[in-house]
Amino acid sequence: MLKREVVAKTHEIPPGGRKLITPWKGLAGIGIFNIDGQFYALRNLCPHRLGPLCVGQVSRRVVADEPLRDAHEALPFEPEGEVIRCPWHLWEFDIRTGQCLVDPRVHVKTYPVQIEGDTIIVECEQI
Amino acid sequence: MDPLASQPVLAASWRTYVADRVAVVDCDVHQIVRDFDQLLPYLPRYYREQVADQGFLIPSSGYFSAPKRASRTDLAGDDAGENYDGRHIGWDFDLLVREHLDAWKIDQVLLTGGSVYNASILPDADYAAALCRAFNDWTIEHWTARDPRLKAAMAVSTGDPNLAVREIDRIAARSDVVAVLLPSGARVPYGSRCYHSIYEACQRHRLAVCIHPGAEATGMAGSPTGVGYPTYYLETRMARSQMAMAHCASLICEGVFERFPSLSFAFLEMDQFWVPGFLWKMDADWKSLRQQTPWLKQLPSETFRKHIRIGSQPMVEPEAPNQLEELWGAMHAEETLIYCSDWPHFDWDDPAMAYQRVPEKMRLSVFSDNARILLGLPMAERLETKC
Image (cartoon, rainbow over all chains, first blue to last red; front, side, top):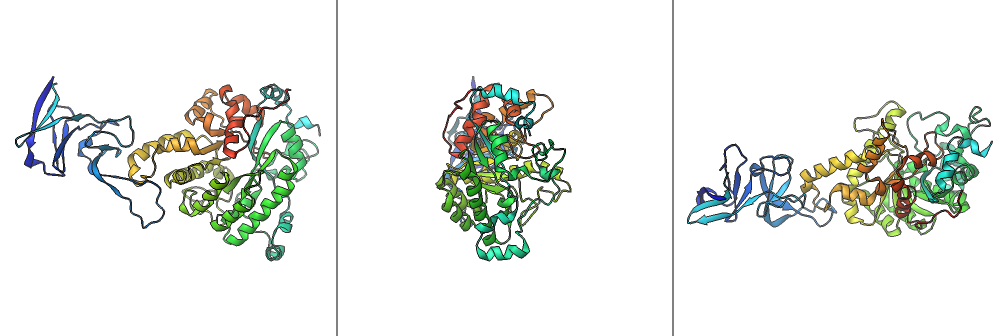
């Protein structure tokens, strides 16, 4: 049984912003992220050690096809695809998919987000 | 001396185990230069004149080692060591053949040098390269050319990588040269970009890179430990694991195996007890710090299992026997472990003792196949004779 949880008005979470909600008392809650106008929701619970994932640093994935050859090369960030780094142990997750970037077996739970007018709604379990 | 005196207790059990007909590869056997003057014919005149009155300046350990040149005295005296005559049995080609290769039916041996490979950290890179070249020529003439079971890990000087590459290109095509030997003591850890041209040459010639204790705290090498210079030899032995871990972490982080995907390293006599903890810890920390080395596409432990091998000597002696199997399970020893005797040193591991401890399902890998793959030796040859 899903319930619809009203998160915020869209203007309250500008691009690059986030909001944490706790639809269930005493549990980890959900983080809602605005990435370039698209909203994504992740459980605020890192599958690694149960840290508060959604309060971590949001950044881009750093990529390199091969080891650096000289100090003048700068490591490039991927052009898109925001990642969040859990504040406990820094595991990275793709915010759009919940996929963990350092262990392919690991996902963080994601939730569907709906925009109705100017209201952000997350569908989550009824507890 | 009775030829069996060197293996008085274990010889009987070894005859039993040889019935398995595993063609043993021993990846750590030392050929010692009796007198550095033996190298003079292989040096250019310029250096011959210098060493004539100033010595060879070959770095050795700055510590007192074990007594009697750290060698087995049971083979060095007239009376089973009672009357040790000052020899180092590592000088003696005939003794190696009779008391090691023949006595224990060793099929292939990797010669890991006298102390000359320590020239790698001499300040004068040109002299260091000349010394390594002389030592390699001496090794070929006096050891590998005399017995087809002997293969050489060649010395190179890392002081000038271009000279190391030149030496590799000079002799690596020989079938009796199968590896490059580097001392654990170094200016910077072995993953550093400054060594990569050497690794390119090794990959091109299919040479493994072997790292063996040596040169730490001498020449331009750093301290054996991360906290400074210890006082006693025992402490430096305990520091081998630190040096091995530092080199391993460096090789993985610097992307040596991304850049040279068919290159392999072996850590000989650098202990093995550290491997499981190292793998667990480095995997965990890499997951946190992936961003700093994004060229690493797989877990450090996966890279280690593909590219790094560990010498079995000195054998671990755990509190309870079953802990040995647990250790080897955790370090994937069926892939990573290679048998080493460390002939002719006092702390050697004879084949029989080592063989009995290795679980049956791993024996062929540890005593033969892993080393053959590492060194590019012909595979799966079993001894023809039964005992």
